[in-house]
Image 1 (spheres, rainbow, N blue to C red):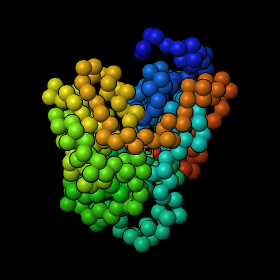
Image 2 (cartoon, protein in one colour; image 1 turned 90 degrees about the vertical axis):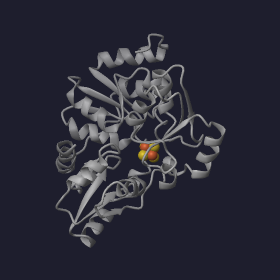
Image 3 (spheres, helix red, strand yellow; image 1 turned 90 degrees about the horizontal axis):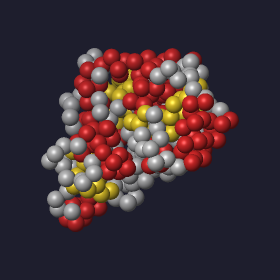
Image 4 (cartoon, rainbow, N blue to C red; image 1 turned 30 degrees about the horizontal axis):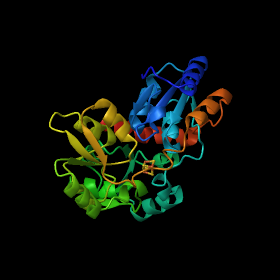
Length: 305
Ligand code: SF4
């Protein structure tokens, strides 16, 4: 951890010790939050690590569905989301009623649900997936005639191109990744001809077609560490540039678009974390009637990964 911490960062570290808490931060969080996190990662990795810790309290610097995943996997711990209105517009593209109706229309369809979804949606799903394991999960569902992939249509189309299974994509998308246009990438490539282009599978198919590497946030960070990569156009949320630059001094990282900023991911500030810890407020708790079936879908994913 960076030793040159500000007074507010030090105060949070003291509060974490006092409350028997750990701070989990997603790669898309503000840099000053990433710098004091106990665990830094993508959404699933954070929740899995959190389930292993002895700490009594989990402070989740991320968005609501991530705090729910932590609650699903760690029901005995107190999970705090310092800004309760930090949501995910992608997760909001599907409501339980709409999924129930789709299941009625396609009774022989397996529902594969991206981790970026609410606990209520996970609870109605056959299995969850991440951007890293989606192809493997889909290929493992041998008995399903067709597969409904929710909620991200771009991820579903990406998986569809990597498998011979029949995939029905849901119409949702992440507005941050979906806003990256192929023309913008081509213009950036012309400006930085030596840079490789890495993109997240939540981007549009025509953007992914221009990428040297397609993968999850963790995958992009790993790819950036390769010796052959010295300059990279980054096709995902800009928060990841903080880690890319920290872990790879001497290499150049350029956002593929200045527009790839998730307002929800940037809602939480250091002050919110301090206040939430001080008052132990903004608890996220998934009730058992949702938690148990949602955990089943997550556990199935883990067993197939
Ligand atoms: Fe949701 Fe996209 Fe923001 Fe991630 S970057 S929290 S998927 S809106």
